[in-house]
Image (cartoon, rainbow, N blue to C red; front, top):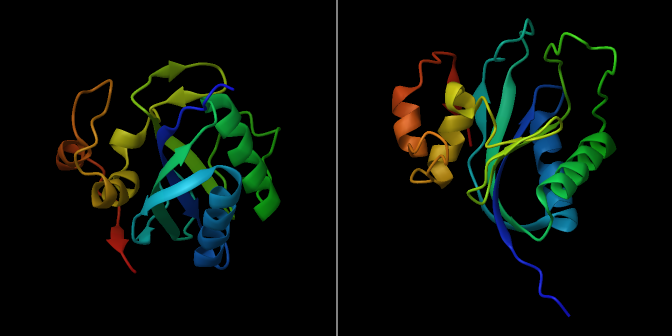
Length: 170
């Protein structure tokens, strides 16, 4: 029997609807049940909506997990969790505008691989531009190296031009 390889994955959870903490906590339980072992979680961070017209505040949290799933299978599992929690994705949103959401789970890193495909890009293509991603990631993995830019999370945070409000809350 072939032994399954464990992969190091970093995810970002986000929510800006109703009881945001509840959605993050519920998705964490489902991630541990459906995807893999939770190695480390950041604190909860509160932030302004990035590139959205919404005035709703977001809660975000970074996760380090171990999984046996391939990147595409991992994405399918994440989409199922988001759907189960109540996220509805609009197929008519052709302009790709950001929407308010109960839960959003992004794959930031998967081992040290680089993927560019129609359905998945790893590392997340915007993570270096977003303080709300870099702050929680810096808390759990400041020395994690970006495989394209060859900068650590801490270095990218120092270079980040995003000035939107981000605050550790608990």
